[in-house]
Image (cartoon, rainbow, N blue to C red; front, side, top):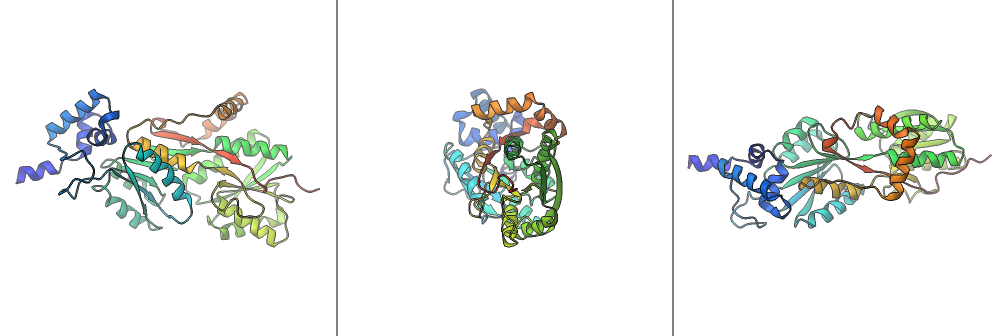
Amino acid sequence: MAGRKSVNRVRQEDVAQMAGVAISTVSRVFNNPNRINPQTAERVRDAAKVLGYTVKSANPMPEGNPHRTHGLLMLVVKDTADGTASQILKGAQAAALESNRSVGIMETGQSVKRSGQMLDTLTDNVDGVILATDQIDVGTIQRISRKLPLVVLNRPVEQVRSVVPNPLIGVSRTLLLLQRYNLHSIVYVSSLKDSWANRSRWESLRMLAHGMGFSIRQIGAVSPSVEGGFQAAIALEGMLPDVIIAFNDVIASGIVLRLAADGIDVPGRTSVVGFDNSLTAPVVSPALTTIRIPRAQLGQVGVQMLLGESGSVSLNLRDARFLSSLAEHGLTARLHDSSSWLDDEKLITEIHTSLVVRGSVGAKLS
């Protein structure tokens, strides 16, 4: 019995280390080997044999083995009520179905301790995790990633595969739109000040705005809520800039609502831009111009990386030409030189943003 017990303790990470492959590759060899190079699959099986790692069946939900994973991937989010999680889930499910997997969703809430505990429970119960919450510390993420295939969305984590939005295209198109309306001064309303999302958005705006001749400053941080938008609007009413760009659409919506309540016309007195293209953006009046974060694509690429695929993202011809134009003017080099989020580019896949133009941006009334 002692020898049998020792065999059961052999994990996929042990096999991966001996075979010199990723944990996700080991998982796919035993669950979906059709897309694995035959030589790689043979090396993994040989390592598993040496270590005594066995899988009773490659079929999902085998009888009599409650500890076997069931072709299930888990999307872990902080909150399912804001619409963001559903967009990520849609893309993740589409990619998972191609490999005969399914995707569940787990809401961790606001507690950092509880979030880490909930993540620990998944180690022996799912094939992999797509992590889309910032409530779990880096140490815990790195520890779990050594036991279980894991991909982080929306922020880079050292030594862990990540899928992040690159603000470059969305921000650049926003600034070009502002130039068209002869708008020059920008205030960025920050939130979640220590978050990677806030830092990357501000850094992109700051560097590109300076390169294109805008004046720009930052206020906050405010709560990422409608109330946070109210606070920002009140703080700015005495010295309105040409444009207010908020950390997210919810804050931007609060700004529009508060300005309207005080009789300040948007965009006649000041234009307002959000980030995300969330469900709130088209609902307020005027509807929000917003920098779109492609959440469904984040989920899709996250699952592809989780299953051992490249997760590479190709640009459409229009965006490729736009990037070339920015590079000719030195703007992409300026941004890259100032960026600290691409230190380990081999583990990071970037998803490009875009601009959705609505009524909250326009010419100022004379």
